[in-house]
Image 1 (tube, one colour):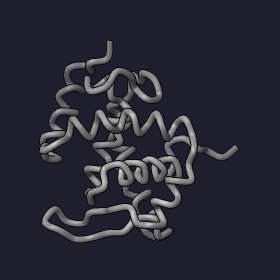
Image 2 (image 1 turned 180 degrees about the vertical axis):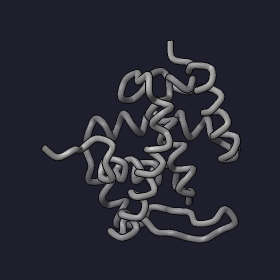
Image 3 (image 1 turned 45 degrees about the vertical axis):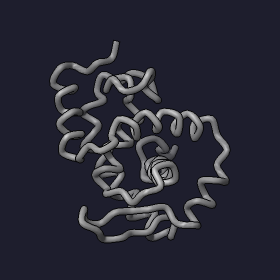
Image 4 (image 1 turned 60 degrees about the vertical axis):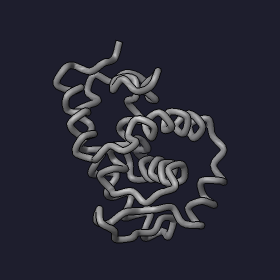
Length: 148
């Protein structure tokens, strides 16, 4: 049986949903942060639920998820679903017309649930730097999480 969870494919879908919703070029590290915050919103104290339920190993996953997101971004660029630009923040990625058409073709509860929780993450990260957000995640992890 093939693995479907925590794969490049699954993460690619979420990267496309982030870029589709955010509408601005984002670095690979920021994509990882936003995705992690969206999946573990309640644990991080920014949403009412954790998308995939509570996971006592959530913070251990961050490094692995970050690596998979990088592979997902590479795959999406090669598939011509996202494009890359270089700016003051380094290489940043944005969804292109092909990616938008793909996202528009998705009609699932998971897409809708993810985008709903993504709004909390995007609101939380406004005007915050990557370093500040990583520190926030680390502080919550060091305090045992906010999950009730």
